[in-house]
Image (cartoon, rainbow, N blue to C red):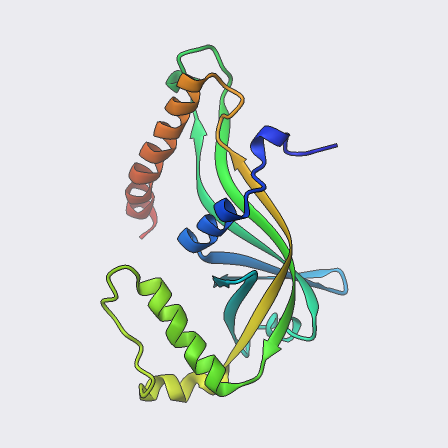
Length: 196
C-alpha cells in the first residue's frame, strides 16, 4: 500500500533539495537499544550528502559516527485548510510539505575541515545578504572547535510528502496554495505575540 497517496508524494529530488535549502533545520533521529535520540540541527546539502555539526556533550553525538543509520526530517510550510477557501464543497484538511530521508552518518575528525565547514554553513545561512562573515581567525571560533563534532550523512532514501490539495480541481488547488501563503505569513507574528 502506498501512503500517502501518490498524488501527495513528490519524488523529484530537486524539489526536496529546495525544501532542505529553504528550511535547513532538520530533525535528526538515531536509535540505540530501541531508544530514540532526537536533535534539531541545521544541515547543509552538498552532492547527495548532508553536512552538520553537533555539540560533543549532546548524547546523540556518539550515534552520529561509525556508519550508523539515521532518519532526517525537514519541514516546509504547513497549515489547516478550511473548506471555506474552496469554491467547491470539501472537508477540512491539513496541507504540508515534509521531506523524510534515511542515510548513513560518519564523523569527520579533522579540525581544519570542521572550521571550514562552520564558515561555509555560516555563509549559506547568511545568504543572500551576508551581513555577517565568520572569519577564519575569529578567536571565539578557535576556542569552540574542541566542543563541536563535524559529521556527514550519505542519503540512501528520499521521500517527499507534498500534501497540497492536489486531488482538488485547479481553482481549489490555487485557493489552498494562497491560504498556505497567507496563513504562514500571518500566523508567525500571532504565535510569537503569545509565547515570546
